[in-house]
Image (cartoon, rainbow, N blue to C red; front, top):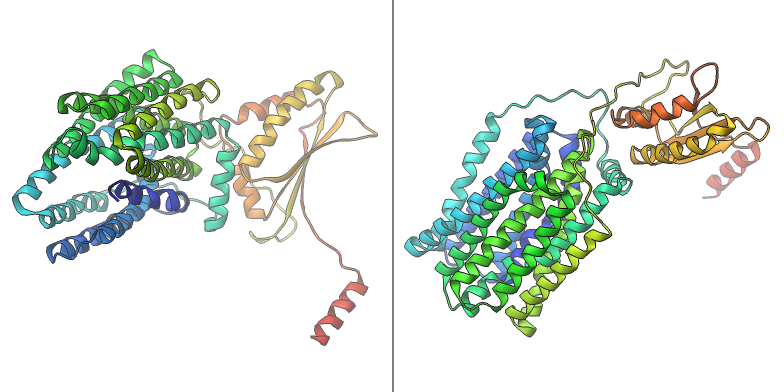
Length: 493
């Protein structure tokens, strides 16, 4: 039941973050955060009333915790994506580390304050102070006026926006590695925080004060990890930092599991706190720096979904393991799993931070059309003719393989590459988009980094003019007999 507290916080983030990410990329992030913070304020106020009246039960507490997790799920993608709105791209890594440090300062100070309030005035008073804390965040968000670039296109529908986010991550191998490693880290690392109450009570023989001090040690270690992250990234690769985080957490989990001394346990928690923020901030930075702004909320939300899926599943799993085999053995098993997570880096190494320019390419100009199309008109078929010399075919095919990934990543479907049988030097690239507005959106998503592939393909083209682009709308013809048969069926019904 105690382990389920962490699971009930992480589960909504796992379930709803992808929807929240789609909202973050299509609506005003400031307003989304205001709604989320106001919702959590209301839940906290209700929890305070129930605690004051003595109506709190374990399952009701889990329900309130789940609702607070829902507010967090709505808030987090907009909050994380806003980091890139506040600072230049070169400062994103430092801003993410600073954001993690601020969060973990509260992790170290909050338990101590909460423990003192509970000791002096009871749990209801602690819940009341927590309720009041939301007003500061709401006030800051209400005063913030970010500059938002206007969009010339209509918003994507929620389903299409979620699909675009999933497709982008699926066609971005570097982000896929981060998502996988984040899930594995959350699965293994969740044991420490989920079982910490049992460590405080059963392994070191303490009470609420000892538990608060242990949470504080974890938070202080996390602050140290945030301070060290910049220096470690200077001397180690991204995978090197991740590997040390996995190994450090494995060692600390083993010490916590076998220690019955409060001092050695707190020392190990300093290590685990540092490794926690080193790993999670590294995953965050990598996704932020590997994703253009149009999809960053969805990419961040998917990364967080998988990390918190690991945390939610791990919390439940380690709780069951602790019931069956004891908290010490469960922590030792989580350390072994962390060692496996470090070894996975040999196969799924995290990508290095690069200087990719993911700003919009802005080369596309919407063509003048002689047909009167509506934004929803479609399907649209695009065919591009290239003239490629025989000796350039291998280089052309390699470039087109990368072009295929970019096309599909940015929303194209049914991509194909064809060669003319009568004129073998003519190659035709084709793809579909469901509507005209999706074709325009597809082209506006191209980044400066994608221009390298486009320029390479253009340089291989040997024709007297630029590659010929055919933009067509697909139409189906129905024979008269089919129309008559359809009318007859309708009359019979």
